[in-house]
Image 1 (cartoon, rainbow, N blue to C red):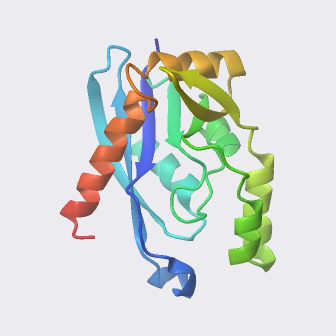
Image 2: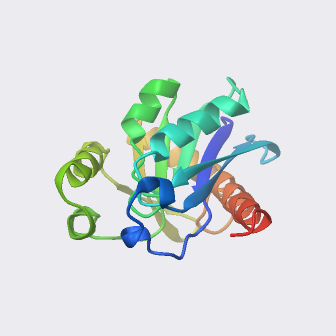
Length: 193
């Protein structure tokens, strides 16, 4: 089974909608965790992206590059909007990194279009809607009596399900996502957020 690299943000509780200039907006901590098939953590890296911005895809690309790990076979990302509608372009990541990207979410939802239209307008809305609409469809995956939802770019649905199940020994959160989430939260606490 493949090595997995993952990014996850530490939960951000402040609504940045009134922050104005993106330079003044807070940042969300991302963590990439390399987790081997035997579930040994084999590397960590950190990056940030702007809450409410449009730099999540570039931040994940940079985070992956900083790991210097060509042996990583899959990239798992927690959700598609890690930092208050800062959308991840999973298709672009899969193309740029030349490996499958799986965006895993943990709740069923009606989607983001209504929320995006509420909080953004003009070019900012158009860019986000384009990324969102171009994203692969969500597929429900049953794993350990729980259900997660996966958008897969660079691999088919069967392979995506196999990867998610293989890296989820218990519960419903794949181990690379769990490790990266804990590390991102610890990183955020360390820097004083």
